[in-house]
Amino acid sequence: MVWNPADLPDAQGRTIAITGANAGVGYFTAEQLAGAGAHVILACRDQERAEAAVAAIRRRVRGARVEATPLDVADRASVDAAADALLERDRLDGLILNAGVVHAPRTRRSDRYGNELVLATNVLGHFRLVARVLPALERTAEAAAEPVIGPRIVSLGSLATRLGRLRLDDLQLERSYSSWRAYSGSKIALQAFGFELERRLRAAGSGVTSLVVHPGYSTSGRTPGIRGVNHPSRAKRFVDNLQAAWTQGKDHGAWAPVRAMLDPALTGDDYLGPLARTKGIPVQAHPTRASRSPRTGARLWPLLEAAAAQPFPLP
Ligand SMILES: NC(=O)c1ccc[n+]([C@@H]2O[C@H](COP(=O)([O-])OP(=O)(O)OC[C@H]3O[C@@H](n4cnc5c(N)ncnc54)[C@H](OP(=O)(O)O)[C@@H]3O)[C@@H](O)[C@H]2O)c1
Image 1: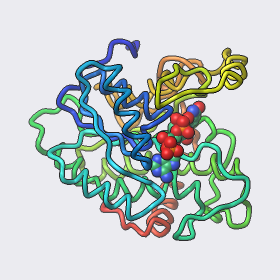
Image 2: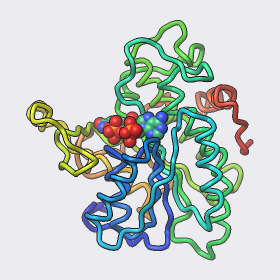
Image 3: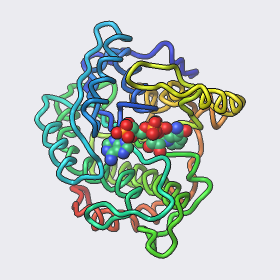
Image 4: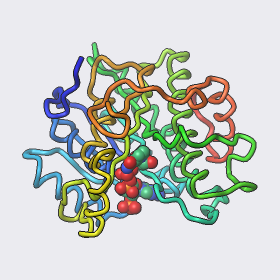
């Protein structure tokens, strides 16, 4: 089937939360899902930026059902509070793990718990959030008589997974930090988590599905300007447009997570990325063997449980 991002299936009645949705790919994922009729929750660390994004979606999508909730994925108390708020809802049909440090610091930095900051933000906070929110997704799955699409968890992977490796013997990069290793390692870990989560959900007979996608190479200089959300400088636009042959806007980067949430034909075995690898409509892509490996996933899981201080309620 050819997926048409301009003609999305109806998502009315579904409630979907997106982490880091005040900017970039997360913002456009929220806007497109709201345009399809979903009730969208923008889970963001800065409430002013979150409200600006909510206002932008309301301006651009007639009748949008959209709201913001506080979430700093690098702060356990904030993750726990956001999870509690999501658990109180009548339903939760989707959770998109999008928030991320994209430009990793040049030197190793730790969060307040001593975890390397990029891993903590991109992976550990999401691991803790999913562990805590899973009952809300399970409840939604059980309540639906015959759901066309059961609840889904979508993880934002990356092409960077092809250009790095996951150091399970030095996950926190205490011995070998570089900004690239931190970013690519975090994305491999997030993909491996998404695939391992899917295996564990299937083994447990869950009605929830975990999918992994990557948004290609999406830059803000190739993205529509939106008040309060995206205002790249003229220099940034100029430089990013020089790379137009192999880049796309973040509005197009959002197509893969949106399809992962809305396409009824997908299963947890699917991995989506842009047609021309770095840009284009979302199609089936090939994850790295390391990130899909059950052995890697099984070894990673307890490391994440320990670092996130969060037992995961799936064997
Ligand atoms: N763009 C690409 O080409 C590309 C390629 C591969 C993968 N990805 C992945 O796609 C996702 C989005 O990327 P992007 O390009 O849209 O990045 P972006 O424009 O930098 O947006 C990142 C978002 O994450 C939020 N965030 C960062 N740290 C956070 C924290 N501790 N708690 C809550 N939110 C936090 C940011 O919020 P603030 O505004 O508060 O900083 C922002 O909303 C990332 O996971 C990235 O790894 C992107």
